[in-house]
Image (cartoon, rainbow, N blue to C red; front, side, top):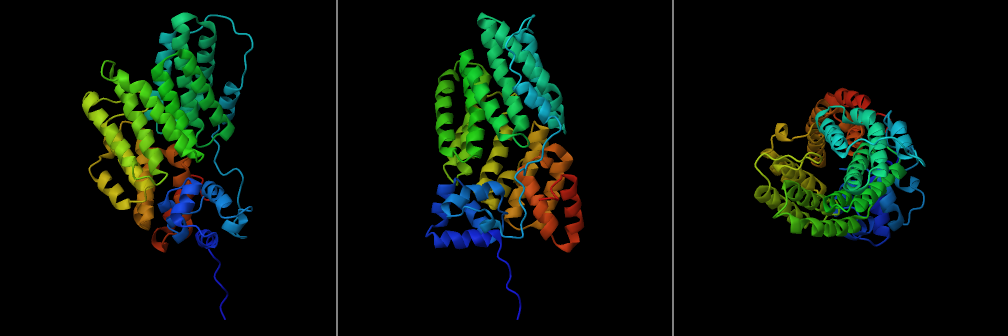
Length: 404
């Protein structure tokens, strides 16, 4: 008589879903996951992450996540790796200066500093380490300028302060305290609103939408993005290219948000972004801060296809996209991670490992701090065929995923 095989987390999800009388589509809608994600969790083609388990549990009647993961799985409450500079950035965000004096930096100087910081973010292979070095000083300088300047200089300084908070959000998103990320979003939006700059306000909503989506509030994110487009769209025809850039970015964010909710309407937002970039932006245009460009639109197409659970479409979209054309090292690394996710959905272990290795070679910190990349690497280390297992284990070790 053989011992009964232990059930997997995915099998437990499926059993509890059926017991609750829920279809995959209904459970996905309640949990703010896509139906494809639920399907792949159940059949083992995607690992059950702690975040997904937390979203599923209330609708499966689960109060102890051990019911999903099983008694042999150890879970850490701190599942995200931390970056060495997080403490310095946290101190800069929570240093409430009651009294500020002296001469503030000029808005022109601060604008140059902000642009240089974003340029470093997009060109360095170790963008989080580089950002962690400059963020504390950048936050202090922009906070001082917003307090000490008056009139138009103050409004400009407030818009730049919002940008400093956006960079802090990008830095903290994958390895900072969730409360600190919320703080950057709230302060960034507050500074933008005080600046009375519609472009700054729209960009702050773009950043807020990313956080809303990540905590399961996709409907709110899509609605806020729609409101932001209302601020921007009337100014596209007569404004500079930054207005068209922002409009395209808002559509791209909405497309990704809808895709991660399993909404095929994501493609209508993606197509709207494509039309804006092709018709309203000069050939070869690249946005300074979020790198809006024709190649980035194609990157988002791959991301949407992966999140909609369509690896064939993801590969078709990626076929004509030269990764070298992506105008950001960080985004190029993330693109390889998305291609690895697509290969993972198809069960192509060798291709998945190859693409993760390319992502790491492009931007080691993007892979080290990316939750999907770490999850895939950890599973490969456990489950890859013997021919590539040693390589998978070594990659998992290098990016710190071996403990997952």
